[in-house]
Image (cartoon, rainbow, N blue to C red):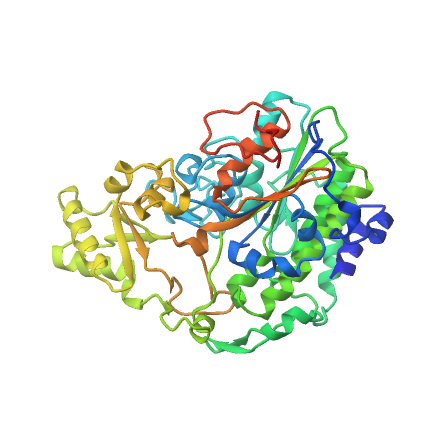
Length: 550
């Protein structure tokens, strides 16, 4: 796969001879013993690895020899937190480059219900414009409409319009939530090609990327070799009638779905990012630039196979090489860049594998927790026709068709019934959530209600919120591409690593908890950009008495 990245880079970002010849990033040539840099970096590289939990980081950090090995020489925060309750892709990405929690970004979930949406489908996707005629939450026009706050890139442009902002990702929601409302380039994998907003001209680097990826997909992919440390994990397991756990990402020619759920997708994203950096001369202007990179193959692998099997081990090994090749390419161009790497959320392994590994209490959510079925039963009891409850991502909404004089009775009946379910940890009404607050305390100490408040938006959140007990997976029946998930308020879904690296900085590790909302004030301080009113705080990246936040 390192040869694959080199081939993609050779097609997209030229020349790469220095990258191919560069030593592993973990070698002594990238020592960090020099004094910390005192001048602002010219390019900020913000990387989100979708579903890269703190647990995955801890499991594989001793096996990283390339890109991650380099980042481990910087400032390492292994206990970063997506501190809110709705630990999903869109809310998580909305925190990384805004410095604000979902309750302020407005991105409460991947989807929510808007009963006033001007279309029959009232479920709204976080990165769409639901006002577009003929759209629904699956077939939509990508948009930054729902992000309520500016990103770091927007703040940089406001301070100096010469700053350029670029976002490249495997998912539209990753690119949009990290790039923001004002971007110079924004591209994401659209299922068959890299696409952007309608009408945006295709730059040369993206077209070269499209051509290289099309050529790659047109050829079959042989099974990937298995590193020695992955061999003990290559154990087959039956999950919902599918045998997995020992897959090696072999792919038939033309199979775009298999391409998406493989390390090759990350290679394409990083290669196109490198091509845009080169063509746009990012990091070489009069003002600092920013590129946001969303790598989502880890998430697709986690959902499709579970994060505890051999497939994830191969994904971690290949991602390490991909990041290493990308950083070595930037080195070969002499760019002064600063990296931050984190994740939008964590993840939990598939129930069946957990049950085999000392966790017999693991379970899948029961079918009788169906919101629509519970609503129908309550409607029958109270004499209410039509849909009564609408559910989306844990939020439950009382249908607007329910008479006003019966809404309170519907909520009371539903909350009482759901709270009594043995798989439910808590049910909170919107009034209870709104009355709570986010404490000035470490995120691991927050109550469930406080975590829910960090995800609460009065315009978009439901009438009540359901929280399942720990180790209950919210997938009742596993199927192709979807056997494990995330989204819970528990720490296995909230905890993510946060890594900062810049050539010449003194590395250190801080095991105490921090938050992803701390990233923006931290990066802003390194480029001398004043920010205020954010949920996060600046993290001091100097390991000695000096303070990068002052």
